[in-house]
Amino acid sequence: MKKQSVVVEHAFSSTDVKTPVGKLKIVMHGKDLAGITWPKDKRKFDWDKIKAIPESKESKTMAQDIEKYFKTKKMKKKIWTSLVGTDLQLAVWKELLDIPFGATVSYSDLAKSLKKPKAVRAIASAIAKNPVSVLIPCHRVVGKDTSLTGFAGGLKAKKWLINWEAENNKTSKATKPSAAKAKKSTTTAAATK
Image 1 (cartoon, rainbow, N blue to C red):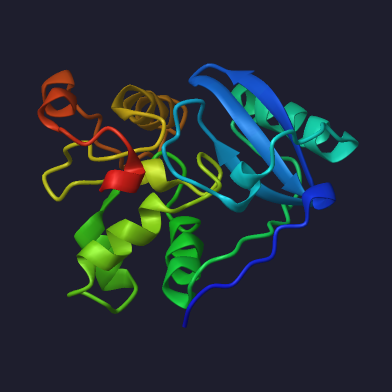
Image 2: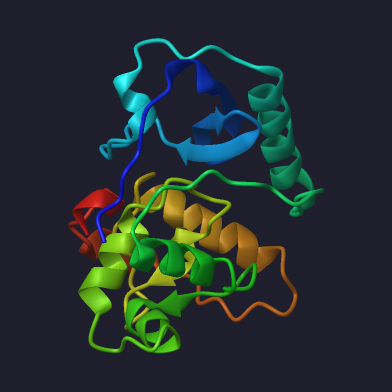
């Protein structure tokens, strides 16, 4: 099934937020979160077609919630998202939400949990298209050998997020990636995975 979307310019708003891992753009679609993206993000989303997206009360509030997340490690409320994707993409993004804070899984383990063990590449592609970076934790997915692989925010940001979560979670099963493993990867953006 092909995804379909209609861009309604006045429905989007955005706010930039500084975080310990770098600047993020919060994009809202009405009152729903549509995306969290990185300054050098090479992926293209519906809102990228709009030249100027205004700030809104909702985008400012979400930016404040993201700032609090990095201080408290918790989101205060349920976040409604406005996601557009294929059935597989939506299933993968939902599965990412089940990876515990501070834990990591491999692409192949994720494929097995989705009962699609032979679809590792398709699942990796769906992860790469995750529009809500950080909160839909695609950074928690690593190579089978725990090596760091593509991430829209770059491997340095992915490593920081994994280490930050592991350090702030006493029951963490995360394997802290080594600098050597981070340097081995040639992929720098999740969209190219």
